[in-house]
Image 1: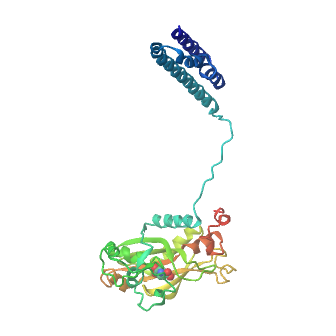
Image 2: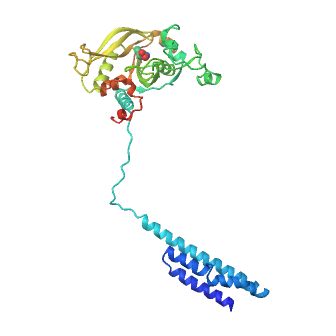
Length: 354
Ligand code: DAH
């Protein structure tokens, strides 16, 4: 009789669970069928009064049914929950979208990309060199004398001496000195490239440089330069002047003139400082060019034959021109920025303007 009672409870419970539509309903059913005051619990409690034989029969049945009812309720709860999720996760395609904040290129990157575009369209290749440079490439190969002040610790950030592993990475090249520095200019890339390539070639080498100096509105310890180098059988200063004029006219999107003034760099002979006609007044004279009509741009010259020798070319076999100057200066002229320190300041009020 007890057995029948238990089976009846099970049938009723299963029917009720199937009909239940809500989490609350299922909760109530759990109380009704399995709770402390439930008929089922009363039966379980009364088991202790049964004979041993009956206990053996009814006990396991009662437990199995209790477990089954519990599981049926649990499953029904899961189904209801997943239905609720589907309803709340409905997508309202008419709701206004969230605006995603997009970043943008740094002004120096914009300018560098433009420089690269102009030069590659003129048949130049882009070369690269390390920011940590050996004293050989940074100074010796460029014919910079041993006692030159640029080698001084006050101008150059020197690093600890090279160890054996680094010497191996340097292809065991005989280096005049093992000292390592943060490169103070991009000119070492000239020597690195020439050691690996035979003329004719034309390259530019943009990149970061470092100098151990006090900063002000036109000096920064970390800055970018780009180097240009063209070498062949009969390259002359006229080629330099033409390439310079073409580049700056395209960069500033107006016809500009290039002017050379005699100067001195150990790695060029002869050497020039070069100017472009003022991008603001066109050469008439204004406050930007201090009434001179010209803007100083950078250094250049015909590659010194001693540099060719240092990279393994025969003396007087080739001719070439080289130039180098600051990318920041170009960006400052383009965007009318009056303090170089803004570029690396991380100040979003500045950066967000580009
Ligand atoms: N390396 C020089 C500097 O940092 C700039 C320079 C001058 C580069 C003349 C050249 C050059 O290639 O021919 O001041």
